Image (cartoon, rainbow, N blue to C red; front, side, top):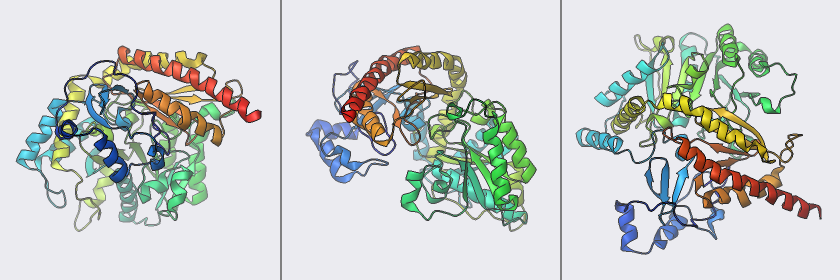
Length: 492
């Protein structure tokens, strides 16, 4: 399905599968075989609380139930096949159905199902931390494990505060992030998140959040300096008082708003600003690491070295929940002596089964050369998306690697966007369900201006690009026609 900002609005599992799937196996399928397939729907609607979802959307339509995955594809409970153009929320980098990853997890579960990293270590967490340090930029050699991305962001902010306090600067507590950026849903990560509708229902938030402009130059005046957004960070530091600012947190390519890429020299300027004012730079790579942009880490693509990296999602390709903060040596140094302590942790951070899963996943990425594969195929992927510019509804195409977005506009010449009511009609009442019914799972979103976002598994190639176009082109054409009709009716 196409996932919208605050609702998941599928058209239902209609149409026939493109190819017949192999016979499914496993407990869920056994339950289906023993009884009414409608039991899944009844139980889903009665007992399961979906995330970021208008539950009322499913009052009169089925909940999409995905039962199996294979490569770039997933199948629903009726056997219909979908191209997973979102990698199950930017996670499944190596594709679905990797038996070697499942087997690595099973071997570890048999040997040591769980032990904590609170004062103890175990071989999988040691091995994974070592492997991450080998792959990360030169000085980032310390790995603090979490259970996922929001926890990694929370941990990075707390670590930045603790680092400054350990050096006698306990007044440094504020975190600067960008408008429309999404950094997570827990209370500290939500403070960093620059999306007002996600923030206001849960205020008051953790104090200290400061927001600056993002790098969406599609919406900038043509004569604006290309490093304006970077310089806005220094202005914010000066306004807040450098002695109060702990860190700046930025994604290499910003997810919220639709794959905003940095201008040439942006991160180099930000690095200079942070160094000048003693502020740490956190590279939030929950999405942008593990090959998504064509490098192990997104900061490598744009040529900067942060003090901290947050990562999750693709570290295991979603086969197990895991996240991490990767810290430079100078960040760890104050905590390595005497009674010093970073007084923070999570029960399941560095879970041995998750670490074994991550090690197997990294081995697949390396063995199959998936970073190089993304770099080699980014051009054809982007060319396919650029070819859609002949549709009047397509305003902008942007992104990097296998992380791309199309911005939808009401008027391409003026860049006029759709208002709130129009977006509701465009995305939730039509386009999201249309894409899903045609067999493509991607993301439609209007937390900024309306977009369609694509983030396929890193194994995707020309066949998948052609399939994506075969769905996007007619769906976007129909969406444009739908909005013209709706606009005419609204004026009547």
